[in-house]
Structures are given as C-alpha cells and as structure tokens.
Amino acid sequence: MLSREEFIRESLELNLFFQRIMKEHLFFIETSAQPVDSRIKAQAASLRMSFAELLAQTIRAANGVVSEAAIGSNEFVTPFTLDSEETTARLTGTSINITLTRAELELTSNRKQFNSYDEVFIRALNGRTLDALERVINFQKRLIDMVASCSIFIPLYPELLRHITREAELYRNELRALNEGELPRGRICFQIDFWNNIMLEHAQFIDGLLDPTEEALKAAAQGFVDRFSELIGRCSAENESRIASQSREAAKDIKAYKAAATEGLLRCNIESIIVPLLADHVLREANHFLRILG
Ligand SMILES: [Fe+2]
Ligand SMILES: [Fe+2]
Image (tube, rainbow, N blue to C red):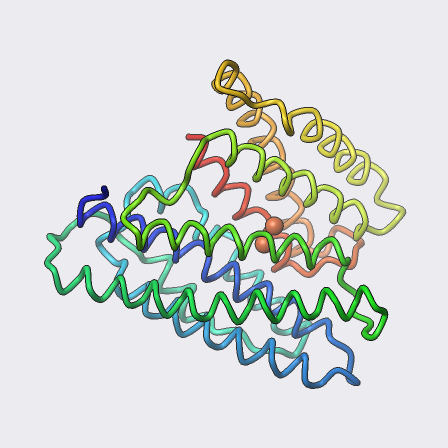
C-alpha cells in the first residue's frame, strides 16, 4: 500500500509526463487529418483541450511536490520543448498553449507536507484523467478501424496510431493501479519490454519520415531498430539486471540521437517530414524510459 505522500507524488509525476504526451498525440492527429475529415479534426482538438486543462491542474498541484529526479530527467519538458512548440505551431497554423511549458520549466521539488484534502483532490484529478483517457482510447481505436477499412486517409502510419494507443493504455493501467493504492509500474521486465518496443518503433518511424537523402541518419535509425529488437523478449528474473543495463545503454544512445535530431530540425539542418514537436516528444519518452531504468 502506498503512503499518502507516495500516492500524491507518483500520481503527479505520472500525470505530468503522460498528460502532455496525450495532448501531443491528439495534436498530431488534429494537424494530419484531411479537410474532408473535419469531424475527426474537431474531435482531436476538443480532446487535446481536455488534456491541456488537466495538465494545467496537474502543474498547479505539482509545484513543490514532485521529485528532483523526475524534474531532472527532462521527461516533462526538455530544453527544446518550448522552441519545438513555437516552431510547430507556426508551421502548422495550430496554436499550442506554451504557458503550460513555461510553468513546467519553473517546477520545483519537495517542499511541502500533505493533508487528506490533497489526497482527495489528486484522486479526483486521476479520476477525471481516466475518463478523458477512455474517450481518447475509444477515439483512436475508431480511427485505427477507419484507416484499416480505407475509409479515411491520414498521413500517419497505422503502426503509429496503434503505438500511441498502446501508450494511452499503459497510462490508463498505471493510473488505475495508483488509484487502487499500488505502485504504478509492475514487473520491471514488462516495463523494459514495453519501452524497448516503443524505442524500436520510434527508430522505424524516424527512418520512414526522414528524406531518402538523409542516408547517415537513416542508417543510424536502422541500427537502433536492430539493437532494440535484440533486447525485446529477453528479460527474465534471472537476467533482469543485465538486460536492464543493456537497455539503459541503448536508450542513452537513442536519447542522444533524438536530441541531435530535434536540434537539427529546429535549425533546419535535416530534410524530413518530421515536425520538431514530434522529435521532442519521442526524446521525452526516451527520458522517461531512462528514469524507469534509473
Ligand atoms: Fe507518444
Ligand atoms: Fe512513442
């Protein structure tokens, strides 16, 4: 059973990371939907707004509460997030609330005591988030079905739509566990396999979205695909720490690659069909994985 303090801190850290992730998935759908699919665009926009509002509440509650390790991991925001949002908003003509990002850049850690009121508030915030998550998962699953039956065209890989939906489902499971008084993350091997697979798919997406002339970057992405595929499914109770340390090395390398790619995109030094916010998004997911492995 989690203590009150653990429940509050773990909830806020999970929400800070994933609420932003969810809002960005919806941004990618919203800005990719074609003019004929105006209802999909509007639904994505409205769900994105819900997650922006939830994130605003989380940030207010999290200030002074979250751990130094979580802030320092750069899984909530990176040094590129603000610039990525401004550039991506300008390039897509779709506004992004950067006051949230500014507030997150100023977050501080561990100052206060908690009372039962805090706990009730956080439990309710988790509940509202679970409701919004249910709507997002249903929406994205409908979209996946429409793509599978060729009744919609959207320039996002079907695998990317399934990938973001798996992330939403993981978030839902971890949040449910927390609200039931358990630690959000179960077996370490499950986490390692889940996130190694996510890292592998990021490398596949990046490879597929780079211009064909970006040969060196594409070859590096392919190298990550090979590396992560060798790690997936290998973790067991006997070799947990060895696979964790190999995963950590691979995740550190892909993190450096993604950081360089985000910076290169922002400086217009890379030819691709990747918006900077997508690069920063996958960088944060690598940072999150590294903190779990930490
Ligand atoms: Fe994601
Ligand atoms: Fe991802």
